[in-house]
Structure formats: structure tokens, C-alpha cells
Amino acid sequence: MSSIAAVLIVKNEAENLDACLASLAWADEIVVLDSGSTDATESVARTRGARFFRNDDWQGFGRQRQRAEALVESEWIFMVDADERVTDTLRDSIRQCVDQGPAIGSMARLSWCFGSFIRHGGWYPDRVLRLYPKGLAGYDDARVHEKLRNDHGLAVRKLQGDLLHYTYRDLRHYLEKSAHYAQAWAQARQEQGRSGSLTAGVLHAVGCFLRMYILKLGVLDGRQGLLLALLSSHSTFAKYADLWVRTRTSSR
Image (cartoon, rainbow, N blue to C red; front, side, top):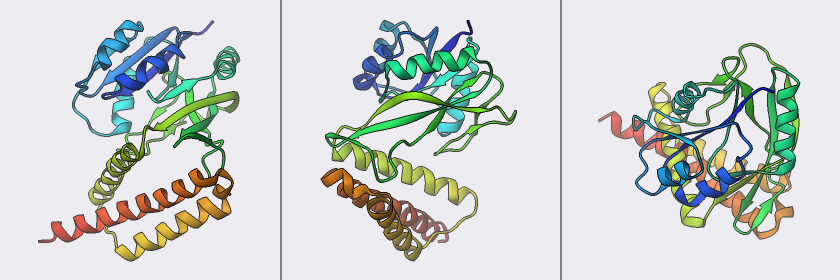
């Protein structure tokens, strides 16, 4: 049987990490790459038997995932985030996929947010590519919204079961995480020589709300669906506003 490594990049994830690693106890290897935690993340990881590494030279999510990939000794990589949990059905489907030979595994991610699992608004099934043979696929170096590259043209298999995603502890956590992504997005665009405008921000924000709440039926998720559509439109505007501000201040 081929060996599978569960791989995580983390920072200050002690609160989430134990439950995540407990759902990964079946993996042949667990690799945790930390980027400068000041909480008990390392202790939790080592207690669960993970191989723990640290690299504080943060250059974005893509580069950090590439570094984590290089630390793997197993034949397959299953990339996981600390706020995710693997269901038994997904675990079994991962094993079956690996036994069938080289391919990329696509899995549905079901998110828990503000007291409810979210099944509409474009949030579900939210399929993500996380399982792949080491050396035959790997992440790009995007600073944020990194993607798995499939340069060898491997088949993509749909796996059964959900990857549970416990997204935000509370509204403050959402706003902090959103601000971090907006900053990374704006920085990447600025480095590419792109500029932003407040008009573009408003148009994209309105489009985001209408798409999530109406076209993708976020209304069916009740008050959580409305809140998420409003917050997502705000986050969309914020990243364009950040890019606009950077353009204005850098021109002085």
C-alpha cells in the first residue's frame, strides 16, 4: 500500500490543531510546518506524533506549501488546514483513491460558520484539490489563493465524504482573517504593477452580494446566509480599496 502524508502549514493554531490531527490519526505521516507560532502549537503537534518543522520566512501561502511538500517522506500528500476535520467516509475514499494509482483527489468541503453548516451561497460543495502523488503535482507560489498545479495531466477523481471546515470562531476572527487576505491580495497585485479603483471595488462588492445571496441561493441558509453575503461583499470592496490606497500612497 502506498504511504500518505497529511501536511499542514500553521501559525498559532493550538486551539484547532488537536482536533484536526485526531481526525488524521490514520495517516502514515503527519508533517506540520510552522511559520512562527507563539502559542502551544508545537507542543500539540508533537504530542499527536507529527513531524514538526519551523520556517519563519513567510513569503506567502504558495511558497510555504512548497516548503512543506519538500519535507514529506511518503509517496502521497494530503494537504490539510488546521481548522479542517476529515470524516470517516472521506478517509476511506482517500485510501481507495491512492490504491487506484496516480491521480488528484477532489473533495467536497462543508463549512461551519456562525453556528450552522453552510450549504448554499457558493460555499458547498466547494470542491478542493488536496490529495496528490508527491512529485507529480504541487502548489504554485501565489502569495494568497494558491492553487495545485497538475503539470503531468493527472486524472482528477471525485472522492466521497466531506472535509469539514470550521472557518471562523466569531465575527472578529472573520474580520481579522479577511483583512489579512485583502492585504495579501492587494500586495500581490501591486507587485504586478496593477492599480485599483473605488468604483471597481463597489461594483465587485455589489456583484459578490447578488451572486452569493440570490444566484447561488444563500438566502436558503437563513440569517447566516445573509450575514455571509454582506461580509463577503465588504471583504471584496476592502481588497480593491487596499490596492487603491497603495497606489495613491506609493505615488508620492
